[in-house]
Length: 337
Image 1 (cartoon, rainbow, N blue to C red):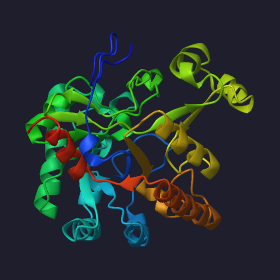
Image 2 (cartoon, one colour):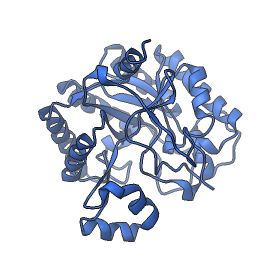
Image 3 (cartoon, one colour):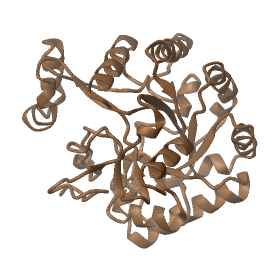
Image 4 (cartoon, rainbow, N blue to C red):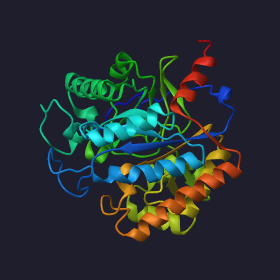
């Protein structure tokens, strides 16, 4: 069974947010700032690390050079690391970056659930337990950094039917859990197949959804959700379609997306009129050996080339960086707040 989500998935209706006050188009850089763990192993409450945090200053310096303020969406193990707290709060208090919230249920107290794949999606927890975990994390961030975060991303994109209520109660006004045009229902995760890449209201004037940006390329891209998600669900079929230039899904991330495809995806997103391009990746990819994408030093060098080239491409095209704070202000401006 597919989970209900931040909008009614059986009969989706989305009210797009008017963000024209930003001066379109813009892009935002979101970083899933999390512990290192075995992506192919079972979920565990122990055995993770945070060594890659030492690599963040180099990445932050690159962002500074382009005038980009990344949003670090931090989870509980990062807030348990004194170096991580000092580093990230320093970036934020200096106005160089923002701090948001990211929930990995399996390493976030209270630990009242069974460890399993289904429960790695917070949307499958009881409403009370999801609330308890999110509140514990939020309070840890506030108390240890002195910052009240205003944005959220569910780990593994696992937002559910009660997530929005919890976020509103915590005073968070932007969610970025929706990975538009992806379906995780085979693992009992959410189905975002028919969710838009344009920002939309979860609750008008109160909670905004800022989806991660994914586009379809190829001759059949206008029917992407149907062709890619419903007619050709297997990876083998999708590979054939991509090689034949019929249809291909491009997520705007350096993880698994070649540079030339990312450039194509950006151009297509702009052609679609996406007002905010949401670039994302996982912080452990900033060091060698912690994610499937960065196995050797050459991969790390290629990652930085990806970032620099993409940033230059956006800059050359007049696509300026933005922040969660600016997005929030723009949404309120156009609501008459």
